[in-house]
Length: 603
Ligand code: F6R
Image (cartoon, rainbow, N blue to C red):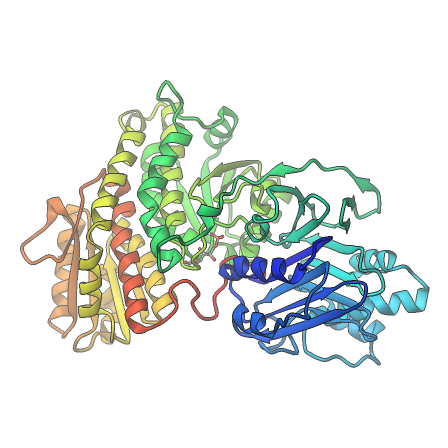
């Protein structure tokens, strides 16, 4: 969701900006723009739609040594060229890109800029006008006016600002929206995500909320809210170009589905000590053991991973677990237990809905753990503890390997905690061995891709709607299966508790409606089979996905047998492939579904 790149001190800045924007495409956007300049010329170019539309407008004379670029995901004002960033001040002297939402933009407009004309409807344009207004009215330098405006803004922002009269400086600031500085040799860069600039540098510096940074080709100076210089060491980004390129795959999603067995094995490698014990810090286990209830707070697929991990966590630790949607929890908090412990599940570690809850629970003094794929992300920095997913960058908008990695990490954490509490289910559970079996099972499903393509053609390619049903863990996997299918193939899909269908929703079953039953547990599974018969007799086109030990003649997808705690890890994989093939066969872009953003940095 909205991406920023910038560079100063390098010839052909436009090429670096375009490549950086392409690397940020995965975040989701609906328009893009760039500004490049040198001492003699400057160019501002915008385009609606994909980066390639922008690239087509970048003719050979569009070149410079300083540049900023932006991908916009519309919040204030529809997707259009006028609303695309960069935005300019009234005289055109200042050029600004912004990620985030300025909550008091209306108030700033009325109070300071009532007589200004704007080109679009965005909250960003007001900011760049206001900086120039203060420079003119109060005779402030660009830096001082920028700093002053930062103090007037309410909301979230990552900004990169250029003053055309001084193309040797890039002004940067951040609050609640991600932004990093990258250090080069004779040049420096800014970006929302290290991935965007990994071709330029591996050395990055974090910016904390409220800070402003003055970036020149060979120096960066960070200032805190009070204007005091801050020293912050750089770090090496552990990213490899092969991690972020598609290689021979047609789509990132397929690559990421295929990577899941390797991710399961990497979790074993990262979390197993040489003596076979679990490598999780004792202070974290102690803090969770002292709590009386776990609250898992997350959005979308990460929330579904929370549900998929609930039963195993409760069984292994004997601690009750509640799962909540971040967007609901913060503003509609339930009555909490006496000693709650919060777990934030977030692939990106940047999701604004989850972060607003973390800020609140931190203020309330409750301990928190973030389980994330991105080391150093906002949620990771702000929680007391972090456990990493080690899944490698997830670039397709539809999350796959992060979902399975989240369940894997929850299983490892629950086992460590349960063993510490002396719970026999945890002592008896060889989590690393079982995750190894999961990896092998996943590989055998992946090797049957063609079969999933055929089943998709038979069941999903032309349908308007579809249902996944199951009970217990299979219901939770159904929720994720339906989300995956609907978000990329645009088939209206629902994940339903199999037994609940007859209490209303069965009215939607028509001749040919696909209903996919997930069965990994014997007793509940026999009830799900009953529910499949009910819909079949009303015309549904049913498909059974079942653990191989429970299979009956005619069942279409057999799931390799794994430990009952870990069945979700196996059952979800065919549903990811069905969603993938349904999207391909319906002719849509698998990796970049409409309206969606990968990293959702606004509430
Ligand atoms: C769906 C998907 C989203 C994310 C959600 C939370 O495929 O990826 O539903 O799971 O936006 O994102 P994170 O996990 O980054 O907090």
